[in-house]
Image (cartoon, rainbow, N blue to C red; front, side, top):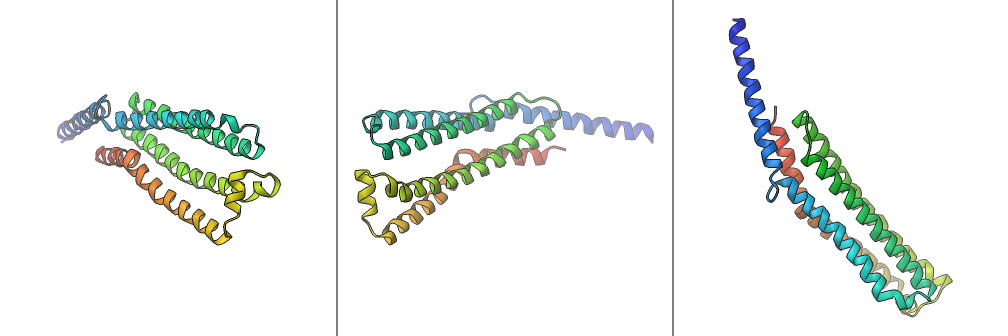
Length: 198
């Protein structure tokens, strides 16, 4: 009886080891695997926000003598740097996932949970930044004047706040869709792989 139990335990261990190996091979696929796709998406986001920051500096450098424009440009640059660093950290976490060792299931669960949590923070952070920019648009003109800000404030408050609400709604739905397409599908796939492990 003990010999049968030992054989059964050995078969299950070999099966689990083989399953872990197959999943690790899938994860380590350099071009098509879910981790490679996540890494590439995070890398593209870092590049995108760096390019956005450089473009803003290049196009607005002549407005640096205008204090109101300087406040907006400075805030925008800080935003781009913060987001680029955030995505770079996600890229590093994904690189660690690619090179993980030890218990496959617990490592996968931990990395997937961390990345999902960070993507939630990203969505919350994006909304907070939008609210900060709206606040700046509404408050700065009371202290500093700029041609564009004066034109914006000459509009009815109903029009302005409707535009803000529409912008926030678009950001919410588009942000969720982009997140799901670029990141969510791979994290869901990794989560399903984790569920298959014993």
